[in-house]
Amino acid sequence: MTAASTPPAPGDGALPTSYLEAFGEDRGYLNFARFGPPSRVAAETSASLMETAMSGSVEAGGVLDAQSLRAREAFARLSGFPPENVGLVPNTSLGLFQAAFGIERGAVLISSGEFPANLYPWLRAHDIGRVNAQLMGGPGVHVTPDLVAESMNSETVAVTVSAVDFRTGLRADLPGIREVIGADRLLIVDGIQAFGAVDVDWSPADVLVAGGQKWVRAGWGAGGMAFSDAGLERIRPVLGGWTGVMDAHAYDGMEHDLRPGADRFSMSNLSPFAAGAFASALELIESASVARIDAQIASGVDALIGCLDDTGVEVLSPRDRRDRGGIVVAGVPDGKAAQAHRSLAEGGISATLHGHDRIRFSVHATTAPAVFRDVACIVADSSFVPPA
Image (cartoon, rainbow, N blue to C red; front, top):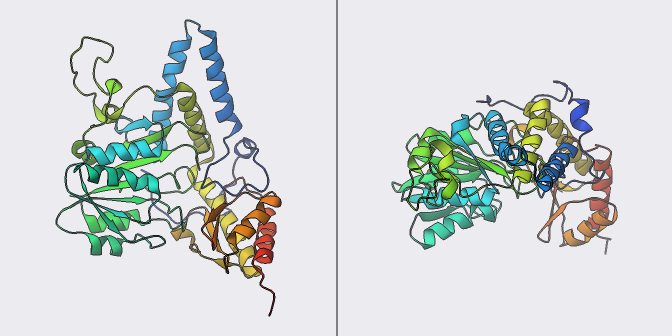
């Protein structure tokens, strides 16, 4: 699997022109943590597959069916998991529901500050007695190995965490969490705010789930779900459907044996248009390399933080490259975040408003650094309080 390392310096290899020219988002788009504008190749793949389906040709079914295998193999290569341990899901939430409803009974630790997609599956599984969801931390509280160690007890069978926190941009210490929970507990990772953009060693995870609509920039409708051998052994496909069994097309009215590997978690056929776009987006990432994308993002984040510092705007997210992804959070005092957010939109800058005192920006490898000064000036001007 990809070795864990400090993100390379910006000079460690420029991104290919073919990668940079594959995108065409507005200059002021700084909202990749919400969704990533898809590449041209992802959009063209989806459109081409739709035309194939429209044709109804003899070959159409085979072309459409092949997209899921393409996407699985690409997700396996980028995640480092064996192809047989990788499946597809329509979104991150469904993958996490698969894990929550299929995991062995016991207590599962989760931060109450997690993004809801990695909170409600465990609460719903708790409601019906599948697991004992035990909350730790809270909004803005970092999920560190120390917090996990303090929160565990003899009933704990798993810990679930986001690889990069949606609220603060903190990169989770997955190897550290793995060390404190030991080999007998499962580590379940929501990777959507990191996959394809942060050079992460995913090997500590027993379950990794990541949708394609954010940093992968594939659009909605497809994502990947990967398991360690222990994850496959200890999580049952409670929500597996007819495509997760052997001889699925026998139609004999009998319950069939489960398919091997991660295929057993399949509920139904995925959209071939979404799967094809996901595959193309993953292959585009491979062509550039996650390490180079990560380095470019890190350089952009450094530049944005520098501009915010220069204009006196408070930075609430991690500064050290080893501790962060592509998210930068600006603090806006006196409840003026909504006003600043409106001013940013009027200036053509897309960002996410978080409450009354925070604005979240997210930088990708294709973000033009020239926009960062505009961002900082607009936030600073909107936050200015005239003297009494």
